[in-house]
Image (cartoon, rainbow, N blue to C red):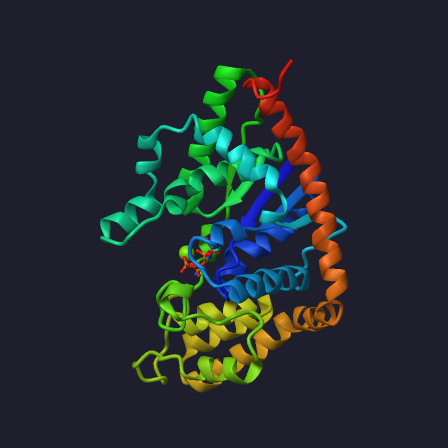
Length: 322
Ligand code: ATP
Ligand code: MG
């Protein structure tokens, strides 16, 4: 089985990205083969600043390596290092009905809000289909919001195969555990766009300040309280051990605790939880050549596979002279 997933370098990774996606990707790296790419071509539709995009792409590589993505077990590469994918994208585009893309929600939502959309956003599902099909991926771990795009990919692969023969492997989505929806500092879903994030590799000082400023429940703290719906408890649960979490839940139910103490516990548990990754990040940071080697090696392996699939597709649709 071959697993593939991409993550956009549109900002530094936050706890939502980690617990909602990255942690689960990393757990899947022991499948037969795992391909993970940093989707800088997709990010280019939103980040239009040279230094910023290349820095975020490099940071994403460092972050993923530090968080446990193991180049010995998974292929890590940068999307634009595999030009075969863009070429495959064109082959797919020639058979993509406009209506199919008009129904895709990323574009539809932006349009509905009266925002200007470009062709990159409109055709984004086709590039995503090429990303997946180029590596004969069987399984694509995604959040619920991406399931529609996997359907588009299956549609495009199916109609290409129907017309030109069995060229593409049909991928299946594997839904990431949605229960991992991480709340942000304001209690809404944690998201870059809401500016309510705790970044995984944020400096400890500023991170502590953010945590200490989270607005806590106005109910008197003497009262007993159900922990489940409380943002502080939810954040703590992510980074605490099982025993710590149970102890905290018992404290909520008993009442008489201080939210300041809960916040301090989050800070301490987070330092503990991400401590090893922070150290690993510093280590990778001191070896930029090794990071580049990992990405170059990943790109080489990815290109070999994508080249094979592209060749198959080109041959099937008459682009190779016989
Ligand atoms: P944007 O605001 O631009 O949408 P984001 O902060 O929501 O950015 P994405 O790039 O959309 O981050 O998400 C990357 C991955 O992280 C996706 O798989 C998404 O499902 C997951 N993810 C993002 N935020 C959360 C969250 N709060 N809880 C769980 N998973 C999340
Ligand atoms: Mg999002």
